[in-house]
Length: 232
Image 1 (cartoon, rainbow, N blue to C red):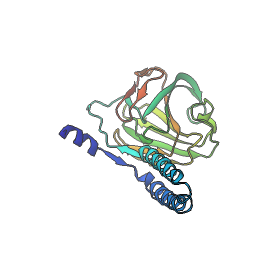
Image 2 (tube, rainbow, N blue to C red; image 1 turned 135 degrees about the vertical axis):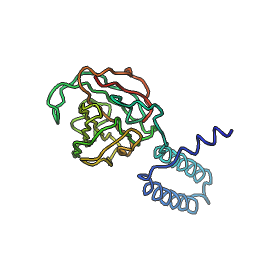
Image 3 (cartoon, rainbow, N blue to C red; image 1 turned 90 degrees about the horizontal axis):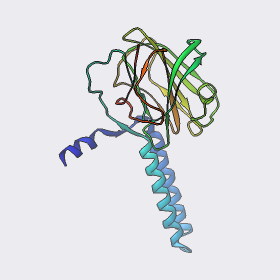
Image 4 (cartoon, rainbow, N blue to C red; image 1 turned 30 degrees about the vertical axis):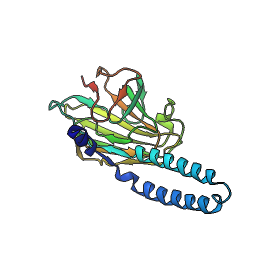
């Protein structure tokens, strides 16, 4: 029981959800009050059903803004790429990266559903070389073109081994805000939060050819815990 309580203490709500949760609570409370006073005298079952539905929806939103406190336990992080997000590996392939590298890179993509934690972690130790935000469309995040056509934020990190990797936060069909905390020139380390994407989305990682990938297609990842790859 003590171990379980310690684990629960490591879960908190992300600060990006404060406004959404407060406003959502107020809106749902007002709507429930209106339904109760207007509809309940004629059909009490409707007001009870409406209250149950709003509670479920609100709990789903609360679940979305979970922010687990995680620490990568192993001391040797040189050349190691850690999953920047919770989700599912949907792409592992060589592609032409035309925003920054303009050459072929190994791309690993993690799709985050509505029920995943949407905090993003720094995937490797290093120094931030570039941060760039792009406005765009809101296609479904699992579609290949979403990486280059959707709203997105690109971060380039020079790793502690001297390799450059590119991490791209991509908005999805429901996402309407991407937050990136890193700034150009920042030193960054595993365990730090890189940013947050509100609602369904994905994170793409572009790695040098020759990188040893340590995940498989369809595998579930845990942000700041699952080892994605080892740089060459």
